[in-house]
Image (cartoon, rainbow, N blue to C red; front, top):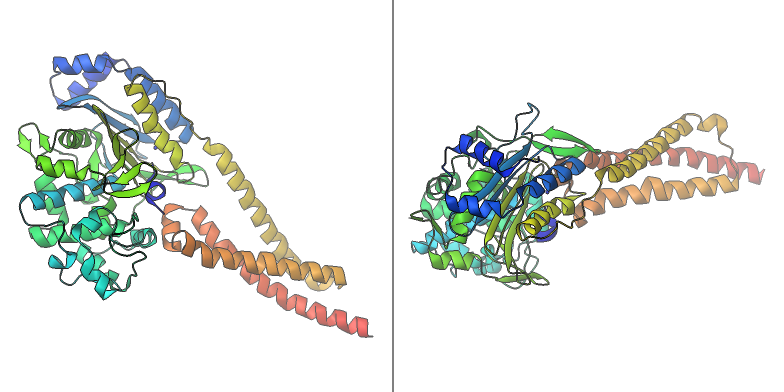
Length: 500
């Protein structure tokens, strides 16, 4: 799926005075006068009401929000709901898997190494990973670092999706397995959002720095930014929220796979408090407090439109740019978490959610739209879907299919005693087998994974429903074979009766 599709995203009323008191207690930070003045101009009660309403409607267990203003001011942060089955409340320090928001960290790491003269954006990947190879040897030599950053390497969105369930290995091994992967576009010509681009960048970071990707990010980004609740692996996070997925409409906690090899593209871990610090550095030309995290030139280049996506949307380096409204942003969605960060004018906002519902991902996106509208003094005129209707329809269809299967099984057992061979019935059963027991199952089993994502990814991202979509066609095919055997006997009997 494309960037918007692959990567789209999701949602307690207290007074401002109480909220600040809670923040003080948790963080121990004194409140500057500038923060008080800026926060007072934001309708925090309206933001809380939006979050609570949307989370209830979308059945989101927990979320965390951080808002910064240009300069070095964190003006609002708050946790909503629960972090997991233990019902611990979400706080600004609660950690979440941030999905493709991770790409901007990978881009920043690359630009730090550019600042040090260790990486040239124009240089081929093979200058840093001599063993790097895709199926086309000549094209492999042409892929430059900038092509990976801009998502114009020629690696497809589909292959990037397929890699989501192949990350249970070190980054280098994960990249080496691309030797048979075909490019779908000439190098440097077309934007195709592919996780593989940023996984390869993670490999370059390891090769150039001599550290693992996790070690590099920890030492050069997390620590300088005092991101104390951030990590490159679940084992390094003591306050990690559980991820949730809708299973036929019931929001249930689920475990993530081992994504060791795909951390650079989508599996870093952070909190709203930490991400607010990160946004401050992004909004202040690479500086945080008295530290320079990345040069001003590199920080600007990370936000510069480079590859046309659609309309006024462009991809930069781990950031997307909406030239129409002068906003930069990036979404992130894993199998069971959602995130979105934006920089719009003087405001930077991070939203982290410990669930995702891919049938209603647009409504998750609407949460950030609503928060941003409130920040700019507008009413949050947004459209939040009602998942109940969707899952009632899905449930009704599933029950109808199960009913048909039960009826078919019953029909097979009583076929010999109750089936009457008439021309009309024979035509009906032949048509039924060809359509329901053959054509539709084969189309689902063979073409769905080729057109959308592989079955392995469907199973992980659509728990329950994905398995239902796979096993039902298999059952229908088996029933079709059994019906065909019985029907063949019935046709022979019918011909014998007609001839007699």
